[in-house]
Length: 341
Image (cartoon, rainbow, N blue to C red; front, side, top):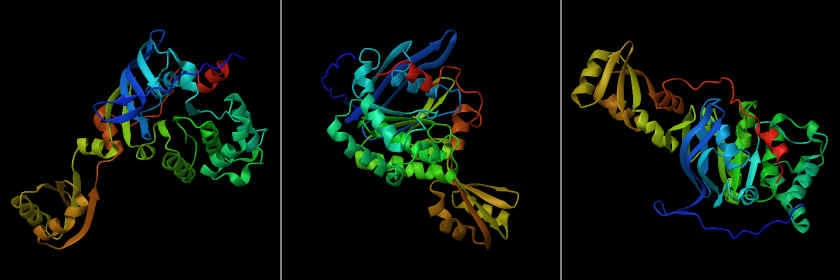
């Protein structure tokens, strides 16, 4: 096994934002023959941030992650992870990242602890630190009581959580989660996200995930919507929703025409439609009492709708998020097995 070259840790920072960066991506491109899977994406991720690449299957999310994890060579553009260039310093990048694949890569004939010990050997974790690190990561994902059990006895959710623990064993700077909850039921997904948020809070790890689940993207500090290999929007979930439009407050009243006229006279933008008066406003929940008072007629029902990430995706891509054929490129697990650290 070749000797590990020690590389000084650089201090990557964004002067404009005044924050330390964990990931820097500029005009990144990936082509597979005539297929351009990623078309010049650019973004950065701050240290300790949860950042989501949101998009349908086949949009370029996993291909982008592959390049950042050095499992695929960029065709053009640049990317730095933990301050190191993914082209020129791939070994340094790999030592500073954790990765949870779409496909399960645990050995189900080994126990949870044995899987972690094998990972510790691959990443050359100092022998005197292994036990303490295993204890720590199993606690983080609430699997302390199953450490001696075969992985073959684990549910899908438990196996996913163990994979996250394995990805954290060597104390990475950035943890990549590629569609981490595909196939899990909503309750298990929620439990897994409790684990992920605990990692950020207790370990300060940066988390970059890909997903096509809208509710999952809500956990992110910022979201990049990617479609057909391009980023079409990038901001916090709330900021993206504000870009789509205002809240709507629907009032079902005893006299919708009269209520609508009074609301319009008071300066509200509204329309009478069907059985309700629809009022367009900011922060709709806080406006309900005021609107009812202005309407001045009995109100039998109130419904407040805030823009959702489904609305955001529809706004920026022109369609609902789709689940179609995945990106037709080799899987991350296959590439990982082909090229060890």
